[in-house]
Amino acid sequence: MPSTETLTFVSDAPPGEKMQLNMGPSHPATHGVLRLQLELDGDIITRCDPVIGYLHRGIEKLAENMHYNQFVPYTDRLDYLAPLANNVAYAIAVEKLAHLEVPPRCQAIRVVCCELARISSHLLGLGVYGMDTGAWTIFMYTFTEREKLHSLFEELTGARFTTSYTRIGGVGRDIPDGWLERVVKFCDALPRTIDEIDKLLTLNKIFLDRTKDIAPVSKELALAYAFTGANLRASGVPADLRKDRPYSGYENYDFDVPVGTVGDCYDRYLVRMEELRQSLRIVKQAAAKMPDGLWYAAEAKKIFPPSKADILENMEALVQNFMLTVEGPQMPAGEVYFEAENPKGALGFFIHSKGGGVPWRLHIRGGSFLSLGILSKIVPGHYLTDVTAILGSLDFVMGECDR
Image 1 (cartoon, rainbow, N blue to C red):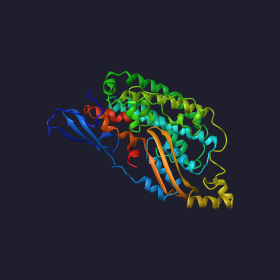
Image 2: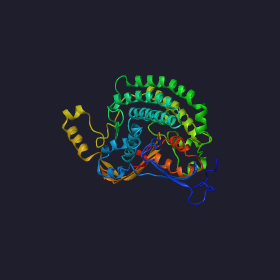
Image 3: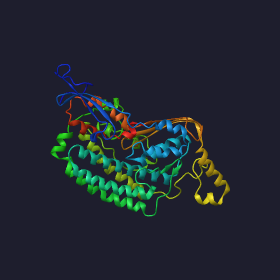
Image 4: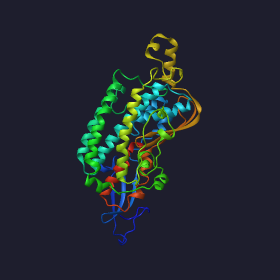
């Protein structure tokens, strides 16, 4: 395989003999509205330029015109395969601005939500990756399990897909009776499916040929291109924000950080497979020692709304709820940045506040966006048929790129 250390692959084709090919933006292998401008010498790619922006919605600008809680549903639409995790990352950023710490029960609920979101995202990512490389059966296994998760999400949040569950200072509602038991039952059953996928795919000769030594990313290159999440760990960097800068009580849970060695498509697959097992460990630990108490910050009267019972019986609570609805949670002036370990990589929120209920500026750091930046480096030198395997191994989502 020719070297991928340069942006362009050197070929012997005479000038004008190379083919220019557009892959996308409407293409099943581009995982969304992504366009790749490819230059080909026969079947070998000599240049790859990713073109994004087809899904841009101006989300960061919209944040400047709505209250902090009103922006929560917009975070669902970033990595729309893990909306629960997006909600939590944004809420913690705003709470950091307000110098607010939520109760232990709320933190544990958020951990369960984030890890279930990671499982859901990885299940879909692995299933689609199987299809990208010619293995349809894997998708049927993973999508079946993901549907079970969505039923649990619906029971908790009232929605299957765009959940909008987290609030500034807490979560939308407490856990329903018996929900944790059903979550644990799901976690006990999922390893069997993971093992089936392992048997079908991990040592499959066709899958190995499609992924082994394809688009390797060295440790140095991964750091230079600001890789995060599973893509960075597959390149041999044991970086995980849940371990390195714990939040929401992650320091209280026992789990391992899977790390690759080569950083090729196969390593990226293996890391995500192991992350499924580690997330199951975290969820079961959080469920086993779920704290009692409030699921919201009761003392934050200018941030979290009072209960419905208080609103109906107490004039002060009614006024408080009215002010929160009209003006939003009141924040001090200042700047904060927080990033969480999301399924697609680090999801960060930078907030500049001048006080009041609306941010002055808000900027989002999406892991998927930075994962795409390396395509022009690693795709040249590979065959056209390798593009689907490379894109699938990076596991990006365009909602997080085109903000």
